[in-house]
Length: 322
Ligand code: NCD
Image 1: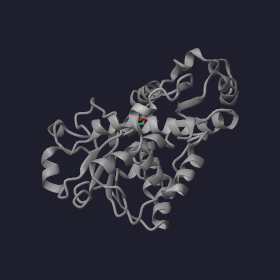
Image 2: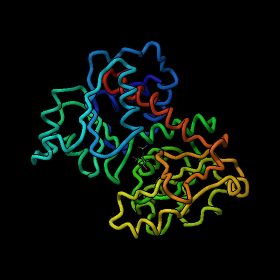
Image 3: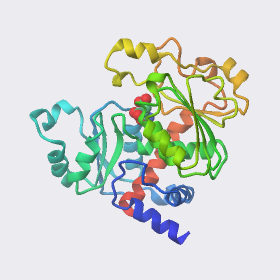
Image 4: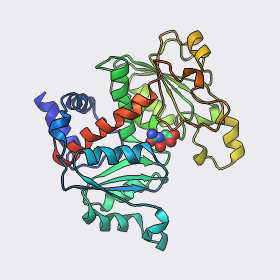
């Protein structure tokens, strides 16, 4: 336990969080133990006087607002960057220069950017910690931390060893699943079903990493044969903004939709249903159909709700070390 707490501090205190790749299983265990012991009433106000810089160069509701909510609940305040059009990036300033300058305006940067390399550029010259809140098609580490927390809660599991999980949809461009599988790789013998159209398969280096670490990976485009034995179905949105043509997007857009009849017929283990949200409500075939709206296993809103607690714990660790 002593080593675990030391690991946790070393991993997070005043450190950037750009990827889930280097988080170890000891650090993960210690992080979720830390959340369990996290006493909200003792923590409220612990970041009084501190400032978070919310730098969102791409649209966001949950991540931006839940970070703001978490930070303010801990007593800190937020500077919102506002529209990119009103920043000096539009005058040709580099991300590195921007990061160096604004480091003296706050205590932590929370950055979302459409380019994968942007978080590295910011981290290179920042003198305060940078949290990656989504870098293009790369990663979304804090979403993955809250996804693991949700699976533990909803499946009533402490360890996720031998978990069976089906990830569905845009596995190529969906950054949440990239971060999530890197965390899940820390557990023992996880069974992964990757269900996607052939155009949107999980990047080969990530499936190779999982196999190398002793996990089972089954890749297919068929949902019905992949959900029968799983404990978790993690649905994702087809990332329209990452396609170069509307036509290519439409071919994949409605590839997977789950409704109650399908759930009752194929989902024999009564898996929990997760989604990082947003769901695309403009499609005629929704990712989760309205017949599942009140289903007890549809955990997507609880998942979003857990994001505030998980981010409070993380911010407290990064800025206070406990
Ligand atoms: C995701 C994202 O932005 O990567 N949403 C989120 O942060 N909860 C998923 C998505 O946009 O589809």
